[in-house]
Amino acid sequence: MSDGNRKVQYLVTFLVSLAAVTTSVSFSWTTPVIPKFHNNETTLNVTDSEISWIVAMTSPGVFTGSMAARFTSDKFGRRMTILNSALPFAIGTIFAMTAYKSWMLYVARYFWGCGAGMVTVVSSIYLAEIAHKDIRGRLTVINRFMFNFGALLVLAVGSFVTFTELNYLLIVLPALYFFACWWVPETPYYHLKEGNIDKAKKELLKLNYYKSDKELQEKLNQMNSDVKKEMSRSGSLKELFVGKQHRRALIISLGLRITQVMAGTIPIMQYLGRIMQESKSGMEVSTALIIFGVVRFIVGLVSSAVVDRVGRRPLLIFSFFGAGVCLAIVGIYFYIQEVVGIENESSSSFRHVAFIGIILFSIVSTFGFDTLIFVVPAEIFPLNVKSVAMTTLNILGAILAFVGVIGYQTVKDLSGLYGVFWSFGTMSFIGAIFSYFVVPETKGKNLRDIQIELQGEIYDDEKLNQTISDVERNENVDVKMINMEDINEKSEDTALNR
Image (cartoon, rainbow, N blue to C red):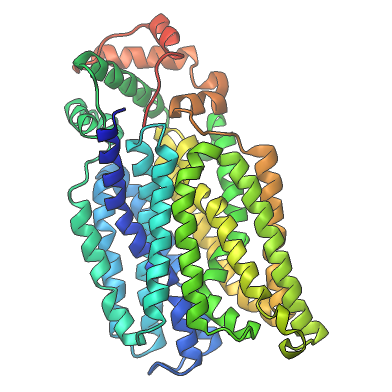
C-alpha cells in the first residue's frame, strides 16, 4: 500500500476519532466535577449516594446505545451509525446545561452513555474494516489515543472553569464530529455484505492504492468471496454463543473485557479527584488531574507506534501484571493510612505514593489492556457475527462497569480504599495469567489468517465453500468465477487486507 493511501486511512481515522474524544469527555466529566460537589462549588446539593448513581448512569446508557448500534450498523451502515451517535450526546449535554436537580444529571449521563455505546461498538468495527493489515492495530490505537486526549481536555478545562461553564462548552463536541464524519467513506465490507459490488469498489479505491485494474479486481474478488463465506453463516446472538467456530474468539474477548473492567480503570478514572483528596498527598487536585491526563495522552501517542511492533499478546501480559503491582502498592499505602494509622506528617516522603502508583497504573494500562480490549475483538470475530459480538461485549462491559462503580463505594465503606485497590490488583493478575495461556498473537496477520488460526478446518470446510460457489453462480455481479481447487490454491497466497 502506498504512503498516499496510508495517509487517507490516517485522515479517516482521525475524523472518526473525534467521536472518541466526545465519548471520553462524557465518561471523564465526573472526574473534575465530583470535587466541585464536595467543595460546594455548584448550586446542586448531592450526596455520596447520588454521586455514585451519577457516575453509574452511563452504564445503562451504554447498554441501550450498544443495542441501537447493533441494529443501525448492520441496517444502515457503520458510517451512518457514527453520525447518529451525535444526537444522544447533544441531548445529554442539554440536560447537563439546564440541570437544577440531581435526576437531570442522571438523565444527562444516561444519554451520554447511549452515545458512548454507539461509538464504541461501531468505531472498532469501522476501523478494522478500512485498515490495511500493516497499520490496523496502529489505527485502532490512534482512536484510543484520541480517547485519552478527550480525558485530558475535560480534566484540564474542568479544573479551571465552573460547573455551568464546563457543561456549556461540551455542546461543541457532538456537532464537531458530526460534520467531520459526514465526509468519511462507508467500509467496503459493509457494501459487499449488502451486495453492492460497485459501491464497494469505489470505497476500496478511496482507501487503497492498486497498481492495475487486475490487482483491484483480484482484491475485490477475494474480499467478496470471504464476505460470502462469513455471511453464509448465521449472524444471530444464538450463533455467536452456540457456533463452535466462534467459541475461542468469544472466550478470549469475554475474558479480556471482564478482567479489564474489573481491574478498576473506570472507577479509578471517575473517582480520581476524590481519591486524591482522600490520599492526603498535599497536592492540589487540579494539578494531579492535569498530570494524570497529560501522562495518559503521551502514553497513548507512544503506544500507537508500539502495538504493531511489539504485538498484542506481550503487551497484554506485561500491562496486566504491571497494573497488578501498581494497584497492590497503592493498596498498601491506604492500608498504612487507614488501618495502621500513620499520618502523612510522620512519613512525608511517602505521601505521594498513591498518586505515583495510580500514574504508573495508568501508563501500563494505556500501553496495554485498556487499548487492546478494543483491538483484539475487532480482529478475531468474523464479519457475520462481528456486530453482534461487539454489541454483546459492550453490554457486558456496561453491566460490569455499573457493578464496579456502585461496588466501589460499597467496598470502600466496608474495607476502605485499600480493599478497593487490592481487589482491582487481584483482577489484574488474573488478566495477566489469562492473556498468557489463552490469548493468541494477531500482529501482522490478515483477518482471513486469524480466522483460519482460530477456527481451523471449520473456516474452510468443503460444504461451505461449495455453498459459496453456488451462490456466486446465481448472482449477476462482476466477480470472477472460482472453483474449489482455486480457493484452496489461493487461500495461502491471498489475504483479506484491511
